[in-house]
Image (cartoon, rainbow, N blue to C red):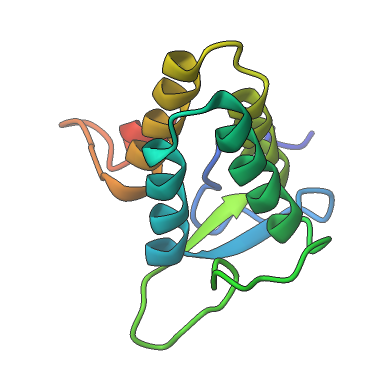
Length: 127
């Protein structure tokens, strides 16, 4: 009997599965791109920005922003690729700019902030 894997955005430390694809993100570059998306005033422009990020994560588009560029002095975040793509698609499918911004801010918080409780060291902001 196997133990089910977490379905969250961030993998459990030490949890490896052959069927779960991971993506390694340059945290600063990724947050910079999300911040640029938040600054946009048009839902169409915001969607274009998010689709560009999806293309980079899927390696369908050139990474001119450095999202996948892992540097020694920068911080790297490991994410489940399927969940990250799902989160980005949710942003792109939002019907209003305010809802899209909410989803962007939620993703930013999950990537940048560490919040734990007294019992566990799991990052609750990432779930």
